[in-house]
Image 1 (cartoon, rainbow, N blue to C red):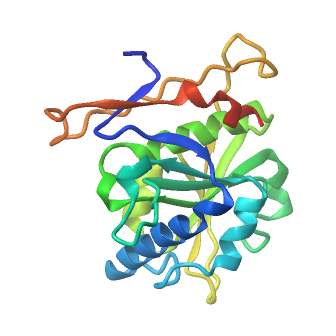
Image 2: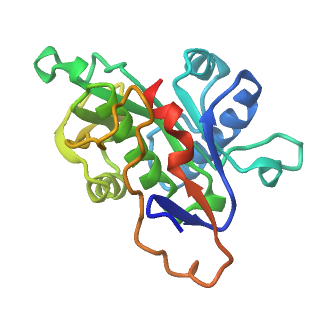
Length: 228
């Protein structure tokens, strides 16, 4: 097995979201928001996001899905992705000030992993991929914001290589804990204008999954998503 693969129990495909994915993306985000709110975390609205918040991300080509194919169809026939992530250059002006040099980073939004795939390292793999994307596009940082009162989520991002920049406490925003991580400082030898191989993405094995039959998510299969 190549070094830059992630062991999974289901074969997944990383791709840009298409308009036909809208309902599946909305479903995953709503389920994730409901789960978070059930834990007392106000990161996202309890009912998820309206289509008007997600359609532009799909239209701009900055929303990505991990597609599990037919395995992902729910009882209504909607194909719900295993995970979503949006990566773009939009720095929330309520959080990131001019002194932060907002143009030095790419920003992660709407990172969600289906509870059916939790504990398999999908979030970490997507964050590593996004950091490489930032590096290839000449941005030295990958940034995000998360709930001010979610210590568990903040610890997750620290373990994923992020450092806490500061917390912006606005009464009308549940989010406000700002994090950033360095993009890879040394890119692979090939030019980013040809075929840039991905950096290794090998999370530590998760207990309880070792004995299951494995398939893989090979990040190198998606080089075009890093460069464009």
